[in-house]
Image (cartoon, rainbow over all chains, first blue to last red; front, side):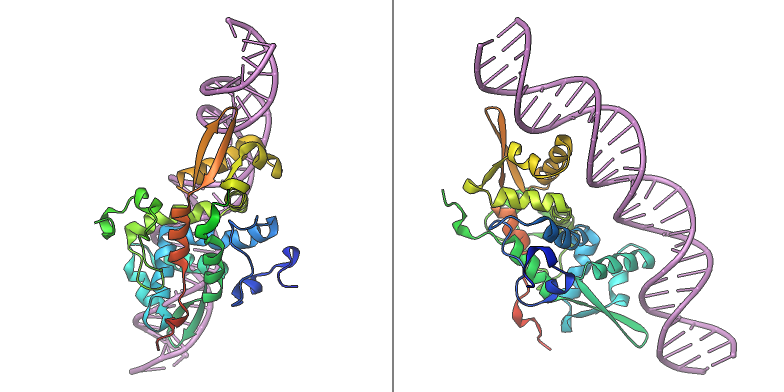
Length: 126
Length: 126
DNA sequence: TCTCTGTTTCGAGAAACATCGAATTCGACA
DNA sequence: TGTCGAATTCGATGTTTCTCGAAACAGAGA
């Protein structure tokens, strides 16, 4: 029952199987929207979008905070705040190894979001 | 030179050809992030995400404000405000026909966003 | 244990946002 | 022309967000 509209959780978003059909294929129910909107909101800041990209495109699939911070003209706390936002949106995972903290993208939810935005070319059915 | 990092405009996002490779494939430059983040931000509100879905999935690809407004427990001005946000983000187009205003999704930018979030399964190269 | 470096949390100020009711604009139709 | 309905703009209010410096926390190494 993981696809029923009323009981969707963040866990479902991390699954590999798509939780939701494309936005243009059927209307997104209110509770699904409430679950997915925070992820889009997290990507809705230029700094976080770049952070997300730097993490996802990093060699090995992970990036150290120590590499991320100096790439912006922003204070350490500010970058940390943005990373927390990405974490709470379920877009990244953090892991401490020794002195450094490494961030890694969660491909599952990324795919969910990409699928949701898919516009099949055959949409003009009229 | 529409793909050069320094001169990207909203127009490029409406094109059918992708302006940007997946976020996980190469790092998103600052000006591209500044251009795309508002689109994600616009989708980062549950009401707007539902509006977007209602518009994109509507029969004929367009939806009347008169059909959108009563679907929410929000005032007319508030829905209008959200629609304006979607419009300014380049996600939808509005057209007045007679008494009613119809909204229509812009598939170009939707595809850009979907492409950006794509995670090819073959990313674990290590 | 003490210190140094990397990272996060806390507290605060400025800016942006969601929401509403009132007022306005735009077409349709008497 | 006058009026009605649909949609937007305007002005106000409470909430959230971005940003910073200061402080706290966590390991590494002497």
